[in-house]
Length: 495
Image: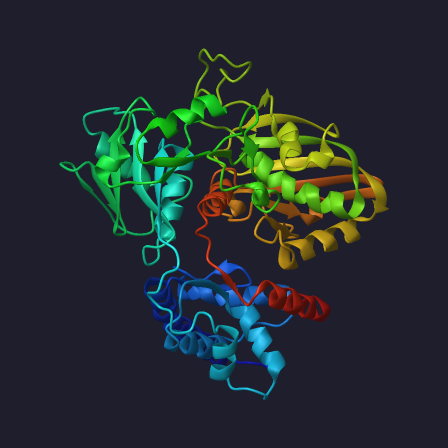
């Protein structure tokens, strides 16, 4: 039966009201119990009613069935009554597992069994928060601040305590706050920001951030601000090796350092999802590699695992950065002195070489180059690969689509086959690389892939994941990994 325009609107308003009713429950679970709820890995924290509806719609891509809002409402309310301890709970997978039980158990009984180790543990935190200091407050620093404020929850986990900068003017504090509040690429800060000139603090959504002025990373007494055993995230790029970055460890209150740039020498270059398991408790200094390395390494691993990579070339079409000149002027680097806003600029990239630090099996198999282009954000990596095993465009695309939905790399790899997407559509993407399926070229053992990536925000999300791994503050996930794998196999069979 055809729906009338009135019935369509009525149905939409019912769905919208259900989504609106979820928002306070999602917020309460987060603030009171530090429980992050998600739908197939997409966090519901801070979502609007429309975003929640879209997340439910997205579930059809994974399971071939749309997740019903009525079902989610019942599940969320049941979770709220259990006074849970800290965890990350995937509503879609939990709902799928409950449906498989049929009529053999009630929802409350199912949840009490499935989440037995969490029930009644609200407030009995098994881990304390970890102090974080952002050394530098540029493009990546400010995005990390936004993400850390967004993830603060009930105060557990990563806790942004301070930023360290050089004083640039008499009104430096208000300038820093303004740059955090407004961003020409990523839009306005989602919340409120106020400053205290006397205390040199910026308070963002209740998170008080001490602004420390210093030119020397080795002489700051963080303990004077109540900061202890902090993770310092150096996003200046000024020091790239262990010797330079170890200056941070000389300051009181610092225990670890993370570099948001490719590390030199023997530093571990970590691409989360690929080699984050190599981080040891003894590692005091770690690199989160580069935005391009994070974008292409998961895709390369996926391709290498199934088809084998004989050799390849990586060409990045990269948005300009602050390292370049706005208009022609002296620059120590070749070509980068020419106007970034007016030119495509051929430059070097270490991404291909850096990939092999995370994927040693590709050592000696990749070359790379880069072109800087006049866009402020979102870049494109073109992977021109020779494979061991022949394939087709459909096989490659179906495989990478499945990887983006069902694999351990689903937080790193995304997939699109829209004929209309352009670079700005990927601003704010939390995935590190989005495969453009329509652009894929496959001819036997010759493969060309186009991978979009938000070189600022997507990379910052990866940095936060490395921070959580270094500090051991990542929430336990439910359903358990075995249950997730079982549910995923069922969903994949249905798709």
